[in-house]
Length: 171
Image (cartoon, rainbow, N blue to C red):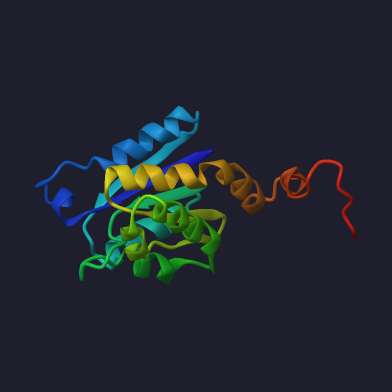
């Protein structure tokens, strides 16, 4: 599986702070045996964010694009809006699952505005900006990413994962 990581941070883009979240996500991706297909770092400018996401999806550079940063309440946090502006379809269950799991750790999870969705055949998921929160949220959705990609790519075996073994499917 090919995964791209886009860090969104004004301070990191200006060189005032080291990006720790992007490298942490890349480490987790490689640990699964997946390819880090592209890496980027942009400021909290919606047009820049949207442009990166569009290029990566439209040029089929990655099966999954993970963003980190810009999902909070700060006036500059506009990652969800930039992401939504280029999506074909939403995938709300991923964002809901991440927030639900995070709520078990901190009430601040309610403040996360991250979204997930699909553009063409690429899944795009917004993760928080802190390295710990980004890693924890990615951990929640890691188990379903291969199946999600198989469905998006219309893999012949993708539909087999929907029914429990031994169950009868009605047609």
